Image (cartoon, rainbow, N blue to C red; front, side, top):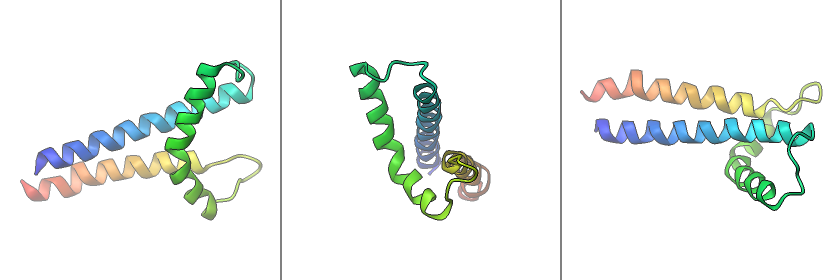
Length: 96
């Protein structure tokens, strides 16, 4: 059973990494630091958008932009971290 919890934790950790990369790339693209006309950058941004938008879109339905800032990635990061802690520290020890 620990292997399943470890696998779920690793998947959540990988998704958390993807969200962080999406936030950084979107900031870099917004401020013109990276060339958004490059095919490689476009492919990376499209991949990250497709991976994060289903979850971020649902969060945005309940949390509109506040002061022009999209806080949905922050909510998602906190939620993923909460799930990881919940699984590893509260649920997994019950099966030992």
